[in-house]
Image 1: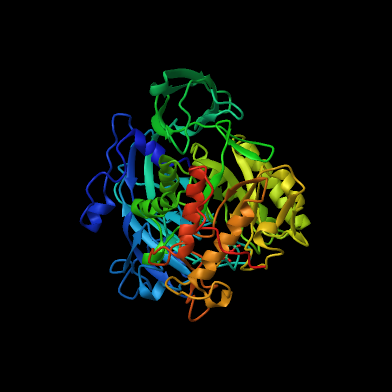
Image 2 (image 1 turned 135 degrees about the horizontal axis):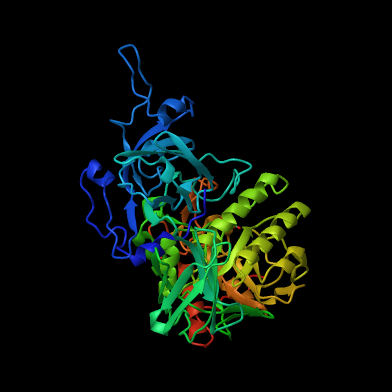
Length: 616
Ligand code: GCB
């Protein structure tokens, strides 16, 4: 299996995937051919209805399914059939598509016919945006490969398996939670299964552009750096980079590994939340061509500050899961991405934490266009078996898949390696290795990890985790007033750090059931007033943290979680949302909104926002 480069970038060059009218019949849909523009690449989008067989007990006998075995004579039979089977929509989680699959954790076989008119001298790349949580892939009865991890994209070259005419694509998808997986057996969000993101086939020339990385060089605001990788690992092939709007046209040549380095002086309008400028970048070789929209900005730290384009920036953030609460399903469409990101913008954010896993490419691209800086992380979330060697291998693959897909997205400023891991030698060894791999793969961005283990000394909270030495930005998930009592009145809490680095409060908050009003001082009543009070108190604390560079409430909207078993208030929902499961604003929303607004206006928040007395 090879790692994939982003699909949307390629599609920009030619005719956009999805611009053709939706095909009506299954057959027409299966054979839908998306014509390329003049640049020569074609795409087949395999989204739509796929036939499925639910393997309730994972019973085995897969061989006949894989070989598409049909009864050979009068005395023969097979114990499966796709022909009159139910279908599931791709992209989409299975849990929200059929009531009996709501809690399903197991395997489902997905099948789809396609015809991509195989041509000599071309290669055919099969791309998956995301399959939760693992899958085996077969084309015409042959195994193409497997993939583990539900939130990163992957690609297979299926040229050798294709026939002219009709082909059969088969996937066994499994979403069991496992102790040695990432995330592990327990996690605080819904375990959606299925082919949750788009599937496409792309036709490319034999020698094609297989990847590229074009950003400003670390520490520079005027020098482009990076590389273009060709599939042929040989030297002296010409690669031309054009950014017409910046007057750039430069031809560079591959080295013996098929890689052409880029190092070009450029006068560019830099991307920022206020002006999210993207440039049309065209990369071409003798045989191939693609186009992407890329923005350019610098991101650095200086002491305890984060600098965007050389100037200090405060990250006004919010986190969200890739879920649409109103539909009780995983977000998968452009309008889903718009809904989540528009709410973040309405709150006044300039930053989002994509929790707790890489979200879809369309979400990342849309956030960038909206001027939102992003934190992207892999789902190394609590309870990971760091002593098991398979973990480093899985985490490293996910890290590379995340960086591979999004390394050209300037909106992403931070790669995060983990969330809430308990300090130990094994954890440090894995995360240290990953930090090094992330820096090697992408020297331009900042590295962080969200921690929740801190020491206390009376009214002081002490940042001492030695792994912080490996990070550019420290991040603390701290639920003062909810999971942790306040060590002092919020305004008297003192944060101390052993490291001269910026800190983001990457999570804080508490639960409230929308419309449930009452006391502001009893957590167990789940009132909006208690949650509002938590926000007021946390903001009072933020104002006293000298090295604070950003905050990120947990969480934008209530989300579904089997962790949450309180019959009256939770009913399977984590209620820490600023928005309810119906999208209604809770009182805490307005506290956060005014806090962010006050920063924009460079005035203190109005008195009526922060006037409640300290609890202690
Ligand atoms: C955390 C986790 C987050 C949980 C949240 C909570 O610290 O990072 O995934 O959902 O707490 O609500 O407990």
